[in-house]
Image (tube, rainbow, N blue to C red; front, side, top):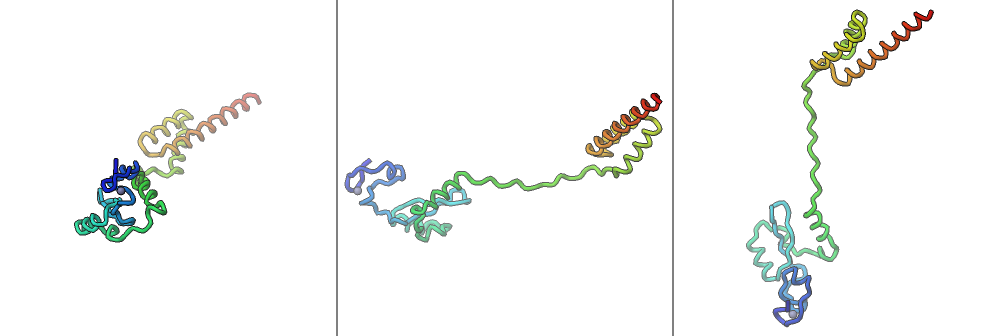
Length: 169
Ligand SMILES: [Zn+2]
């Protein structure tokens, strides 16, 4: 690629940016820019020639910052940072949606009481079955179920130990 004005060789960067003339012949005002809004969510600045910039400003009424001359956005690299953010936007945090409470459990004390009564009258397995059925019917929570099951197991172990101890006496 050669400069259309003086036939000097153009740098690869300038060709990539769409320039057809070299830096010396360039009519592009150093800071002239035009803001383009591709998806209405954000814009990017496209370097254009001064005449083209004025023309675009007349055409684009949505352009706000584009009407002002951008100062040093290329110099201080804020343009690079902006583009980086534009290409890799930080994902929005998902909204916290609390789970709806569908089951209202009976109080823990109340369920323990009925399970212990079952244990006293019908034994360990009957008490376990009752606990399991209460859980199946959504009357107690899983946490309470396992809590009760643990308690029943330790209770059962205690009594079997006691029985042993009684026999040895
Ligand atoms: Zn030139």
